[in-house]
Amino acid sequence: MPGFSLPPHPALTGLIRIMEKAAERIRHWEHLRDRGELDIGLKNQNDLVTAADRESESVIRDYLESTFPSVPFLGEETGWSQSLSGSEYWVLDPLDGTTNFSHGFPQYSISLALIREGQPVLGVIHEVVRNDWFYAISGEGAWKNGKTIHVSERPVSESLFATGFPYRDFSHQNRFFQTLDTVIRSSHGVRRAGSAASDLAYTASGVFGGFWEYGLKPWDVAAGILLVREAGGMVVDYGGGEGMLQSGNIIAGSPHTCRFLLETIRQAYEGHPTD
Image (cartoon, rainbow, N blue to C red):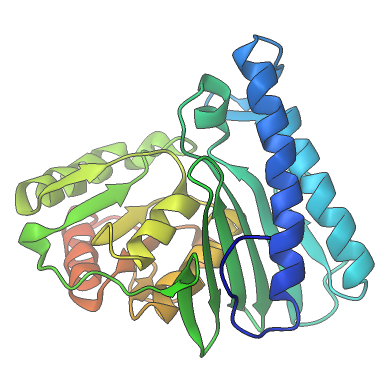
């Protein structure tokens, strides 16, 4: 277990323990990757999958199915474990940043959240290379490695932002680059690190002033949504609502940076649908 205390929660210790085991499997495949022994599969041109993704998901899925047998599980690699019959389910990205992992770029994470009545209520993001742990409990706060975290209070002009390039639906590229241009000109800059879960974790901890991306999946953002909210931030979709898990379009940050991003995106999408 990590060498810091955890807030009391009946599930959190077990989740972190099993996510550690999944991270060990990812690190095993890091060594094989560095020896040229990692097979990389393609879901499509910009969406990769490896044995590390599958093994990480298998470790966590087996634990969740045995420990919480009545709660459905949605994993990026294997889909639903059972039909969704109630208001509660787990959602997992076993390796967010697979392309980074495949190429040896050292930023990728495991992201796990519990959804209840459409909202995340428990979330954990493990940044594998840095061995950082981010976790949040609905109504109780957000932490990094045992210390409470809070979104940045810097103004937009002094903030660093994060984003992800469109890679599934390229019809939004022109509006994305219009938004990117405005944010770059208004801030200290923009980073595109390739892991939405990590970007949201670092937004929650005040490293990034804000984050936006189009066309993500629930496993990319569920835990990060809760982290940002519990760290005092704001999370909305491109229309200013709360449909991020459904649309995959997300804006997150402090209240003032989030409003800045929302207005910038509204201007870029003027006359065009945002969903």
